[in-house]
Image (cartoon, rainbow, N blue to C red):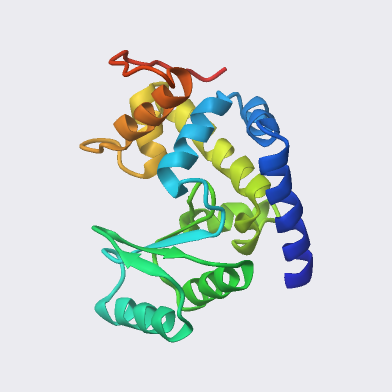
Length: 203
C-alpha cells in the first residue's frame, strides 16, 4: 500500500511541476472552478507543499497537544506552533504518512492534509468515494477533492466571499477571503500593485 502510494505520489508531483497548469485545469474544469482560484487557495493553504499537515490545537485536549508535540520532537519532524495550529512540514512521504496515521488513530478532532489542506472532517465522505486520508498526500487527489468541496461551498452560498470563507470553515469575521484574493491578484497582475476588487465565479 505504502509502496504504491509512494509511486503515485512521485508521479503526481512530477506531473504537477513538469506539466504546468494541467492538474489545476483538470480539477477546475471537472467542478466548474477557475483553476487560478484553486492555485491561489493552495498558495494560502500550504504554499504548494503537498506533504504539509496541520493540526488545530484549539480543538484538541492539552494531553493530545502534548502527545503530538512529544511525538514530533522524538521523530525530529519539523513543526511550528502557530496561532491556532501546529504546522507540520514533513520532509518526506514516510514522515507524512506516519503523522496522518498518528492523528487519525488517536482521533485528533481537526487536522488538514496536503496541497489544499483538506480537513479530516471529510473522512466519511472520502471513504464513500474510495479515498483514504493517506491518499490526500497525492497532489492530484488532493486537488480533485478540494475542488469538489469548494464547488459544494458555491452551491450552498452562491457568493464569492461566503463560499471561499466556507472552504476555510468560518463564514464571518474571517480574513481568509482577503488572503486568497491577494494571491489571485499576484497571478493576474504580477507586475503591479493593484487595489482592484476581484470577483470570481463558478464557471
